[in-house]
Picture 1 (cartoon, rainbow, N blue to C red):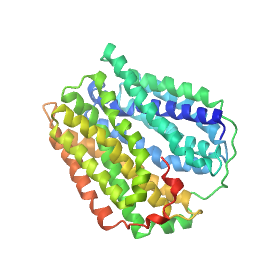
Picture 2: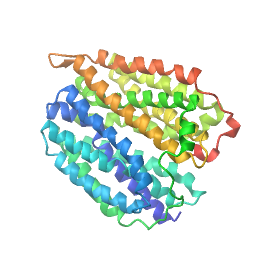
Picture 3: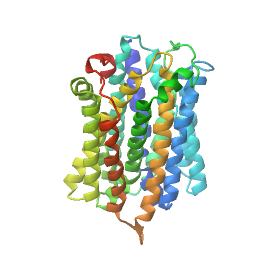
Amino acid sequence: MKLSIKIKLSVTMVLQFMAIGAVIPVLSLYLKDYLHFNSFQTGIIIAVSSVASFVSPVVTSFIADKIISAEKLFTICQFIGAVAMGFLAFQNNFFGVLFLYLFYSLIMGPTIALVNAIIFHSSSNEESKNFGFLRVWGTIGWIIVAWGFYFWLDRYPERIQDVLIFSCITAFILGFFSLTFPKTRARIKSERFTPIESIKVIIKPEIIFLLLFGFLINMVERYFYYGAAPFLKSIGFANKYLMPVLSLGQISEILAMLITGFLIKKFGYRIVMISGLIMKLLKFTALFVGYPSIFVLAGLFLHGFSYAFYFVPFIILLDSYCSKTARTGVHQLSTVFTMGFGNMAGNLIAGAVMGYATVNNVVDYQKFWLVPIIITAVSFIIPIFFIKQKDKDKINIQKLEP
């Protein structure tokens, strides 16, 4: 891969995750405290973003590189998504926000898969191991926008709406920047969306349990993002501190990604997954206790490790059961089940629990955080009893590159 292309793709990752990272951490707070939607309405709005997880596989399978090139479709999505976010920033009616956020999610949802496809189209088989390096720039983009808004909200503490405007502007910039992408050609010929080979893999008992595990973890991840910003504000953190504090998880994620491959090769998938669950349990316990602040911050720092120790072994273990012809379909079905249904369930449950835990407009966050603690504790059963420890000597080294 030429250095100029690598730089362009790195910048793309930074801008892509700046646009996402500006909105996701504080969206629930914006909807509840500034648009004054109730907890369940907030959960419904955020949950509709999960619809993109159902649509994205179809878009990437049937449209990208078959009807229109991935880079052109990526550009179109950025421009349309920017317009949708611009309208959303000035909408305050529940159904208006719901419709616009659904539309925005449907348009922008496929962009992550599209930029991944562009990276692999621009790489030789040997160079594809650079994907981890390029993905890290996305995390850096998330951190940049978090700390940038620290200074902005320090000066304008009540203008949380500006995160949506910033996301809109960033998407426009990325749309224009993506016009400089080199023309690429898909390297893999068209494959059916759900080929029979993929179905045969998905119905294996070990894969069913693995997907159930992914569903539960994605559910508590979305539950966390729903409640994190309102919780931090309730224990005394000013608006300007919310995004930098929540970015502690992205900082630790970079460190975790650098060591996860080594840990899997040394200890195996199950041990790493269980370690991630332990850290996730500690994170939610810190939020449940809620004091002192240093304890809460330490719990948030563990977020990146708990995510990496789940995500990396999950993807590699799932892929290890796939033949070349089954790979695309298996990963697409996995995305629908874990991110689609898992994210939707997490947001809806979080909204319902927060409503239940609210009395006289005051949320009992110990009740709120008890739910993900229980779900995480139950999740231990799957890697301990139902996920097989595969031979470490057979692990594909390239897949473990950070």
